Image 1 (cartoon, each protein chain N blue to C red):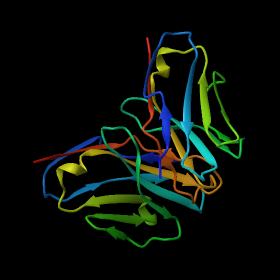
Image 2: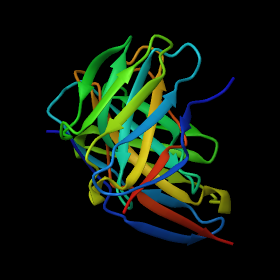
Image 3: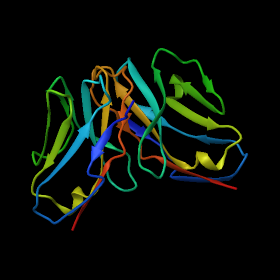
Image 4: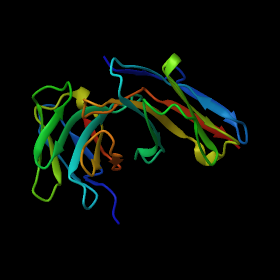
Length: 114
Length: 114
């Protein structure tokens, strides 16, 4: 079975631009979470979606938004990019989105903002 | 508030040595979950273990073992007879039952020299 997939693998944008990152969860998983990992730090929680509803949100500005589609795939959107948004963006999927579920992570999208 | 501290930023040992990665956590919840993840150079986070706050039994899986002590709020990870393939960044993480997110520590970069 395929694991969590993310696209694109790498992305270079300039300040002020908009970016959309995509994630496909493991087949049968209904929950997707997004994390931002700045170089040298641990991942930080951005959003969790379950059954197309936002279940949790981390301490990120409104420039960050996400949605989940009927097939459970998800998009993370970031507007008005700043240099500090440069990071590895990780997507994780789990079956029910509860803490007792194991979260499986994708390979990430590396975003560079110039 | 939740917090995970991994005081060891980098560790380097020679192959076949035993190595212990330290993790100290803070939480006000009585029900919580602790995790260890491995992040190889490819970037994908690999789930290693999940422990709930009511299960203080130590766990062993092959060369890996985990020591959970609520009295000292620690969840340490030991690799016995380390191998070069163990080289990676290791993250300790915490999730409270009421939360939908996982809080990660800053990670420990482990290098195993041949």
